[in-house]
Length: 138
Image (cartoon, rainbow, N blue to C red; front, side, top):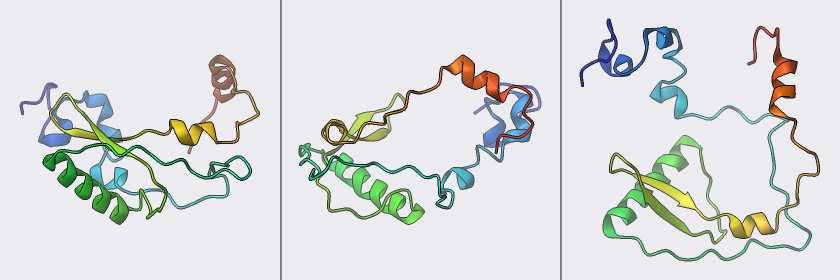
């Protein structure tokens, strides 16, 4: 691949403006492969009382999709992105522009039995106004 920007070299630099060079660590494969430690403010999905997760539809997968699913699950489990579950959720793939596969799960059944969040989201302009003048956001 030929770099699109002057002075760009290596795989990360190709296709990125020079101004982004100082942020290359943020976009590194290593950094995106791990999750942050759990915090007190982590979110939870609360279900309605006496509700149980709905049975998901079983989607037919081709042989390449089945292999991709096994690889995805092994990789995501090892990275800690997912954890073993006995909840019956349907899993399928959607094709990407580059020919790859994007894993998908239909959460409409789960959404139907989730306790609604009772607080309105702030308007974007109001939220941005509160950040004005800030120095560090993380």
